[in-house]
Image (cartoon, rainbow, N blue to C red):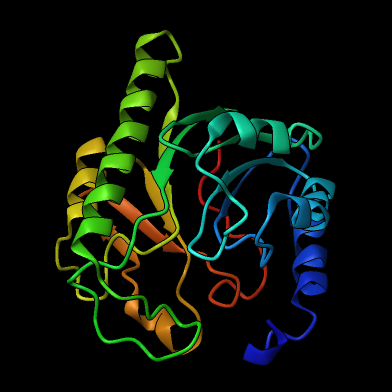
Length: 227
């Protein structure tokens, strides 16, 4: 990412992470984890994440080409990394006092024009939006099943990679689904540089939306909730 001005950003992020996150904290890694294209190429980046404090829940971003569609293969890939307590793949994760659901999502037709480059400019595709909405619903259904199975008293959280809502707050297919689920917070990433202002942040319909991409967050973990 040096080409975008992120000079030695893993070191800055590592220092901030190690200084602020405790071993018992839950950390959501909301996509674009590695430029690797194959599982065999991602080991070093996963080891870096595993070495940081906290219990991690991972989510796929649009650049995570190494992330396959098989949950079984992902479990095998993540098995050597004990701090990875789960991942979102048509599923939900219970981590500490939190019930976390989510999906990658995609750019919706309501998105404003975005700057070119790695700033969030991905073409809106109705078929991709519908696919990701279905995946989001599957994750939320899994969360509800976990609650019915007796995992009660948890705080609901939604994690996505693409913004589910854009500046101005115009409703999207994703925001409707998320707000019906009634989480305490929805965290997302994807937007960088001049594109940061395109994402909605704040409270809408009882959900607090938080943009936590690295440069938007100052290369430091963002505190979402305290329990």
